[in-house]
Length: 233
Image (cartoon, rainbow, N blue to C red):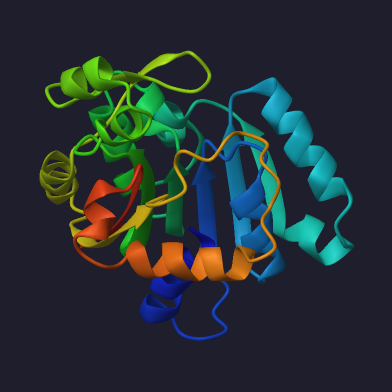
């Protein structure tokens, strides 16, 4: 995910430019902190108090220069217009959020409005075209059969959430003025890994395989997640 994002940033902005980054639903701040370390000015927007506390604790342990480049705001991603002016950011991230939003169109439109012209919108969504893969690989045949005709699923936390199909997201991004520029698959081969599993000794090879698969057809089309990159016109 980080490698894909860095590739898009490097291909769109001059080397060394300090970007204004908004991370909507930043969680524990993994990507936000990484981008702040890279020299960018990062704003994290999150509504979960536990996640905010974790992110602030991680930020507190960073050098002063990094702490000065990152701010954390408590708020709902659907209210970006309350906190920021349109066109305030060069890059907007929204990773692992849309699956929890029943009606994502207003959120997506708000994210696009936050982008300056030529800005990059990075979304990570559950792949609605491949919901049968996980139950199928586990041999859960009834669940796999049902998954072909729905975009609803139950995640590993036991929550009933939703997925997005690539064609539908392509149309939505075009309609909000941030057409799809490119897309990747995420977790092509590793989606069935057990939570908390030990990191394998050959993790760099594993990452190389996932990275290659995530940009190669037909593999990326059956990934658990889709990384969609739109560009503000």
